[in-house]
Length: 64
Image 1 (spheres, one colour):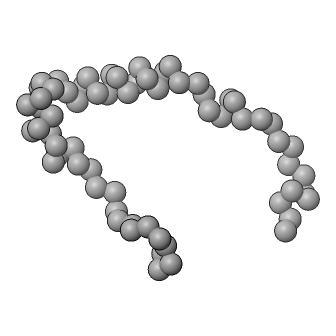
Image 2: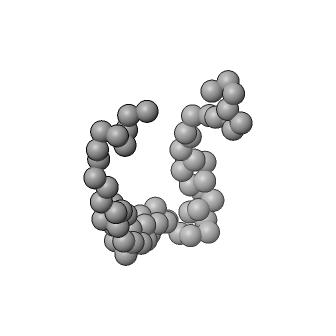
């Protein structure tokens, strides 16, 4: 990580930080509404793994 061009930090959940602001602007049920919207959007998306082409793995492909 010493030579990394990006600044790395640990993931930080910001729900606690933005909770009150979201509650004021989006209502008390904002968490459930966002979760429902996420699930609906996820179900509409195509399955990524099913769209990948099949690749036959042979020994020459992964020996360097």
